[in-house]
Amino acid sequence: DLHSFPTRRSSDLGNLEHENLERSVRRIDFDQEDAMMKFARLLKRLGVEEALEDAGAREGDRVLIGEAEFEFQPDRIIE
Image 1 (cartoon, helix red, strand yellow):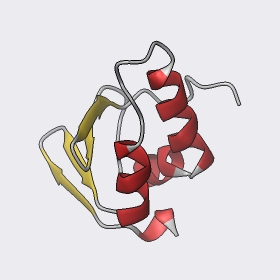
Image 2 (tube, one colour; image 1 turned 135 degrees about the vertical axis):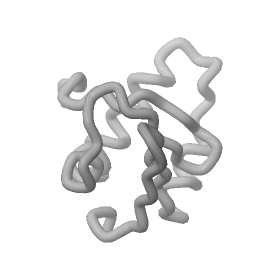
Image 3 (cartoon, rainbow, N blue to C red; image 1 turned 90 degrees about the horizontal axis):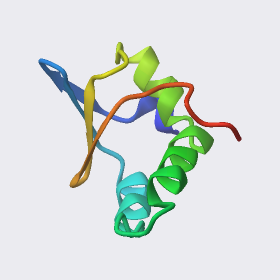
């Protein structure tokens, strides 16, 4: 359940710890043109966006999942 994964915050950086999510993120080839769209859809589909908001994340916060760091931009993805 992604809504119960550990989340740590330090200033504007949130660190998500979830083994299956981290493994999925490692599989994304961010050198590909459509990688960010795939990544965003994965986060939306798995409920990560909602869980981040529940944990207090705000637009523009930096989020770390494994070694992937991104800027939180909620509601930018059309399913």
